[in-house]
Image (cartoon, rainbow, N blue to C red; front, top):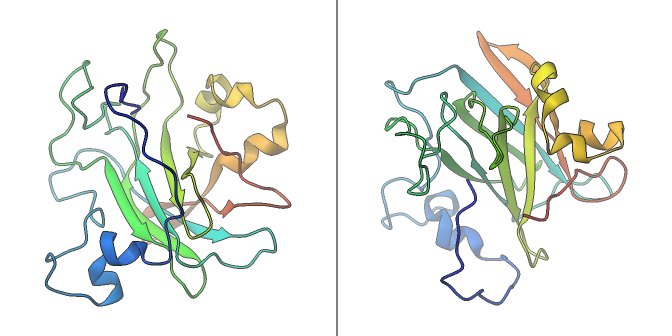
Length: 208
């Protein structure tokens, strides 16, 4: 959920690496004792409402090589389409769902993985419903401004066809870069969302 930050001055932009994981995910780099578990690794618990899903993929550069030193965050609504945010005015979000996750990308093959729930539909300011989606934010060494994109679900074709943001992308092949393919594993839906920073089939990034 986009929050109004007009009461703060914008900080200067700078690259996120190479030591971003020390500050955000110390246990990931084997620095223990800072906190018991890195923030953002767990989104759901036993009492979280909604359909459990897995979101996974690879982050690659223009040559198809895995991007190292990257960090991915996801932000999403709960199963009822409500955000866990002070700016949410439509009701109370599920207290058992974090609504936010963070994971360092594997420095071996550029992969990431989140266990979460399928989000509900969220209305725009004018009342039009958006298709269920997850906001994705990427930072890495060499990226001065974090990259925003969205993950939409391949099995939500009707909702995707009406989504106001997707319809602002005129080229079908560009819209497809925001659609996560569905498979199943161990009885859970798995949505694969590969993120390409440049080159052929570059992911659409959003200026929001």
